Image (cartoon, rainbow, N blue to C red; front, top):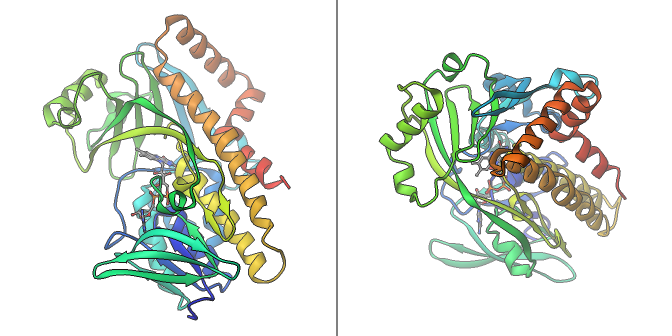
Length: 399
Ligand SMILES: Cc1cc2nc3c(=O)[nH]c(=O)nc-3n(C[C@H](O)[C@H](O)[C@H](O)COP(=O)(O)OP(=O)(O)OC[C@H]3O[C@@H](n4cnc5c(N)ncnc54)[C@H](O)[C@@H]3O)c2cc1C
């Protein structure tokens, strides 16, 4: 690989991996740099929406997600006191997509599949243990300053893709702001082998459950149930993750004891932030480096995959001299629109549905959600938005 004739991708999470694979499939040489010594195995995203499955099919990566994930056509909004509020069935949009369902599958498993696929491309160079400290550029190319075990080095290329997550050094080195806010509540996440489907027979494999004091989310993964609660005022993280506290919390929710923590326990902060710009010259941001949002709705990783596909397509056009660099401004317009006007708005609404404390506002929001689910036209529109199809199509049509 000629050192100047390549794209450098900083970060080997879902956004960086998809960008690398989509570039590699256009015969573009890529150097991907990941700070960790091996693929990261955080249990974070689990929901794959229809347009993401369509993109993964385009890359030849959808089969293992569908075969090893849990296909989930129906999902619910519930309330801890009132039970089922609204049920949505993605079969209602089967005229709009070949994948009228969500797939529940761990993001870390997708990462492993993608790392394996990249091994097939001799023009892809993946380097672990490489921390990108900053990105720079001049008229002819771009470079990154990298920390490795025995010092620092400068690596050159034609473009840099900043896919280095929410604390992105690439974004910071460009001086791009990351405006927004952080919620007071955190998410306390437990994984259990307890059969939640048997304990709550009418529950679907994805359920968002509102409560003024302790809202929660249920996700049925292939190997286990993940149950996430809002954090409690004044409870420190260590206490929230203790077995006795976790088991008492799950027993109070399920109305029976027996659920123990397996596979996973973690605590996450929830943010809503969008970068002021997604591009400076030859350096472009994708995924969490460009935007982070509440996971209520399962959209962060999905939109990072959509960013990566959009950008790889445009970099391919530049590579083949079919477009000039201004096409990267179109990338920013399209993807920043989704982050700011679509994902941010939907995930703020979803989070508010879950944690609304004012009784009158709660009643109004539960009634409004029921009305949407009961009206076929509104049900269809809601599914087009929540499955990310509508926002993506609007963005892709933008100049
Ligand atoms: C609890 C929880 C649940 C979620 N559920 C969902 C969901 O169901 N659906 C969904 O779509 N999204 C979900 N998300 C969001 C999703 O996890 C993120 O949006 C997604 O991980 C973003 O991918 P990314 O590749 O942009 O960033 P990351 O996954 O953060 O990957 C960034 C990579 O860059 C590496 N890196 C960082 N800094 C450097 C550096 N300086 N140099 C080199 N490498 C670096 C990191 O090690 C990492 O491998 C959830 C998030 C949380 C916290």
